[in-house]
Length: 130
Image (cartoon, rainbow, N blue to C red; front, side, top):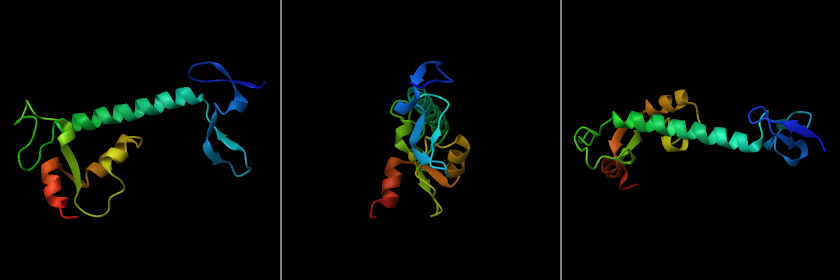
């Protein structure tokens, strides 16, 4: 059996069982793209990346406020970052901010700069009839 060593956890794992293969992409010669880390390590690092982006986004929202005045400064007891949403000012939207957690923080900030931060109630008032 052909074994490969993961560059992250150093475990020896069977190469043929898909531990190092990506989920479908292939090179021009038909060979699958390969990772240098095993699937469990890859999944863990991907989840850590998303978690770190969520933490950055929540820290960013803590400093923001809606035009109606809803913010951490005004409503410390009932404030939640989940209540603040990103309203795109125009139609050149790449994606919803909440769906971009696996993007780079630089690309998330580009998308945030196209938005106004507003509370959920104000967002529903804008889009309520759609």
